[in-house]
Image (cartoon, rainbow, N blue to C red; front, side, top):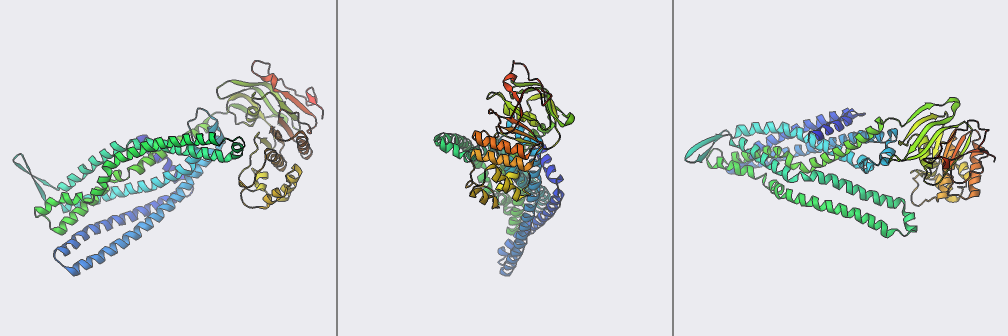
Length: 583
C-alpha cells in the first residue's frame, strides 16, 4: 500500500510540474472551495430537516411551504456548485492528462525506448499503446476525482462530528446485568465503529479485485493487439486462407478474458453481498440509531430527523472508502502499470551504450573489434576492422540468418547485444529498413518522411522517376487525408517509395537493407543507377543477396567469412585496392 501511495505521488508530481500543471492546482483549490460550499449547504440541509418536520408536526402549513422554498434554493445552489466543480475538474483532467501523456510519449521515443522495450525478451512490458492512451486517462480521472473527494471528506468529517456532538448531548440509558449505564453522545461513538466494521469487511471481500483488474487490463489489451495485427496483415491472411488459424488465436485470447471476467464477477458478487445492503440501508440506519432518543423524549420529531440527517452525513462521509473501493482498486492497478512502464523506460535511458562511439577520421565510417550477438548471447558476427570512406559503395553479402539485418541495426546504434568501437561518419545518414514503412499521412508526407513535405513538385517528379506515376498515385498525392485501406501499395511499390524517400532526403550516407528485394533485376538496376546518378558523392552500403548492378564500382564484403569460428573480416583501407568489382 505504501509503495502504491508513493507511486501515486510521483505520477501526480509529474502532472503538476509539467507545462501549465500548476494551473491545475489553482483549479483544484477552487474545486475544494466549492466543496466547502457543499458542506455548508449540507449543514443548512441538516437544519432544514428539523424546521420542516417540526412544521409538519405542528400542522403549520405556511411554515412547511416556506421550508419547501428554502429547500428549492438550497438545491439550486447545490446543483450550480456541483456543475461548476465538475466542469473545473474536467479542465484539470484535460491539462494533466496532456502533461502525463506527453511525458510518457517523450520517454517512449527518447533513446528509441519504443524499439528496445519491444525487442528486449526479458521485459515484462505489454501493450505500451494502452498504457499511454488509456492508463494515463484513467489515472488522471481517478486522481482528480478521488483525491479531491478525500480532502473534502476529511474537512466535512470534522464539521459533521461537531454538529452531531452538539445535537446528541443527551444520555442513552443501557441496562446491563442489573446495572444502569448512561452513555452521552453515543451516536458519535456508534458511527466510527459502524463504518470501521463495514470498511474492514469491504476490504476483506474485495481485495482480490485489484489483482483481477490488472489481469483484465492485460488480457483486454492482448485481444485488441491481436485484432489490430490481423487488420495490418489482412492481405497475407486472406491469401494463405488463414481465417481459421487467426480465429483460433483471437478466440483463445477472448477465452482468457472470459476466465478472468468470471473471476471478477464472482468476486464482485461476493463483495456486493455486503456493499449492496450497506448502500440501501446507510440512509436509514442513522434514523434507527437515533430513534431511542426520540422514544426517551430527548428530541421531538424534527429533532429526530435532524439527528438522523446529521448521523447519515457523518456515516456517508466516513464510508468514502467503501463507496470508492472499486475506483481505488482501478487507480491502484493503473498506477502500478504506469510506474512499471516508466521504470522500464528509465532503465533504457540509463543503460550504457553497447558500443564505444567516436567521430571518425576524415569523415569515414569504421568499426573495430565488433562482436554482434543475439538476445540469448549467441555470437552472430565478428568484425575485427572495417572502414568505409566517403563516396564508397559497398555490397555486404551473406547467408540468410547470419545477421545481416542485425548488422545494419548495430551500425545504426540501436542493437544492444554487441560490443566494440564504432566511428560515426560526418554528414546526413539514412538507414533504410528491410520492410519499407508507410506512415500515416498523405503520399507526399510518406515520401518526405520523417521530414515535412516542403516541395510537392519535387516529390511529384521523384515519384515519376521511381515508377510511381499511375493516376492513383497522383490523385493520392493531391489528397489531404491520411492514406487509408483504400490505397494499397505492393511490396515492390513500397520499395520504390523508399527509394524516392532517399532521393528526397539527399543523404551523405545510405544504408540499404534488401531495399530492392521485391523488384525484378531490371527494375532494381534502374533504381540503383538512379540513386548513384542523383547522389554521386554519397556513400552507399547495400545489404543484399543479389549483386547491386547499377551502382558502379563497389567493394564486396562476404559475411560467409564472418560466421562464428571462422576468421574475422579484415579491413580494406584503400578504396582502389582488392575486392573492388567493376561496374
